[in-house]
Image 1: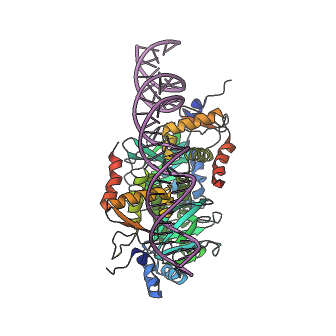
Image 2 (image 1 turned 30 degrees about the vertical axis):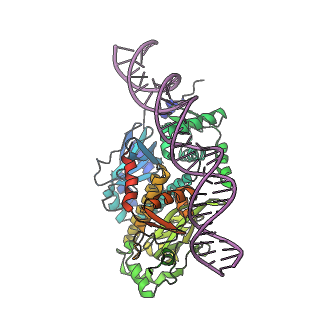
Image 3 (image 1 turned 90 degrees about the vertical axis):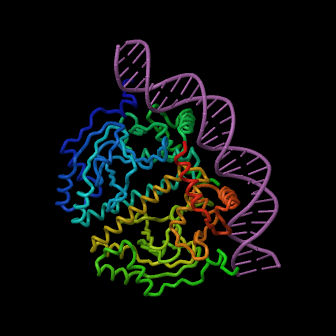
Length: 255
Length: 255
DNA sequence: CGCTTTATTGATCTTCATCAAAGAGCGTGG
DNA sequence: CCACGCTCTTTGATGAAGATCAATAAAGCG
């Protein structure tokens, strides 16, 4: 067969983000729907777009006053080093998600803040603008502020819930839960419908759950033998979603 | 000696919340500072105060459209049942903290949502108003909305960070971290400066970290022998904060 | 002064981390 | 196109942390 390998799918070389595409992305952002026409124009004017290949850090140093970023294509991870050789990935942002990145000291809202790290997990296109510019727009548009507020609390709340769930689960349940979550965040791929469409090493997975990559590897091997998942170097494909869902729910009603 | 026992301190019978105290509490809420005079008035008018003894659930059923609540005195916990006999406490709110509680379905922001449970951890006084009433006030006061937004994202972000930290720590480190966090949220007591001033069973502590109460009990016994903590039925006193802080930081720079 | 809730302690068993060594996938440069 | 090196992965052996189970004890409450 000549369908592409997962590796090829995860490493596209191009990232289209023409001005028209950019504009339509901006207009269709959920929180922009209710904005006044003039703030819509301001947003379209202020956003720059940036094509990024996999593994790029989005440096906070270039934006001393903070950064407002929207993922137009691809996926990025938000993580934090907890010591010299260990990091924790605590959120994954995909198309339409946004972040407000800033120094903890600087005034105004920030959803992720230095020293968190943000980097791409696949070829991505990111729309960015200075955080202060966004704040200026918000000040004159209460509706826009409101939608942003709604969405921010919604996203943070659900991240919270996710982390809380993880606390009380076994490694196997954690992994099932995490894969389902990541799949929910992904756009389905034509050739591999269960493929999680960004680079995801065993170490990444492990660091989202606070377990080791060896454990992840062992669990995925076991599942692979049962035909539940399929995985390789830097990618994971879920074959039997229901199995994962059951694995997870079952244990909830057990005991 | 005739100083009261921890148990007596944690179970006060009275909860003063006279109209004047209530008003001063409202005025001094961090996010209200920037409010317009008229929205300040509206808030003072709409808030009801409610005295609650320890262990009271704040029922969401009485507020189908959601509830905006501010802790004026005491402490409340936000938790969730993960199965029939296990729950996870994922936030503790003390004086000045607020919550926006609502059905997941209903529009607008909510920071905790049904089926989360909210209940008091000591004799408390809670200021409440319907969530929709708050939203009405916010609509006419962009500054107030902004401050609320800032504080909401700040609090949710820090809750997130806290949960993330917990993921990568050992049980002992988790406990040290948690006690320091709880202590930071507490008002110091005159008689016992390190006493965490609300009811806190070993099971509660355990369920904030995803470990078992037996482990908590063993750890606290060990610390008690070293003079680091002191604890009893439903309360914990931290004697040597620095020890806990070291325990925690040390391991970060190790490895 | 019993009853309930909460805590302690010990014995045992699982799960998962750690360490180590070898192997595979992918990019690169000759 | 092949060989090399790098990163990511697999697998096994071992040990330690912490869960589970169970029995007992205390503390607070009516």
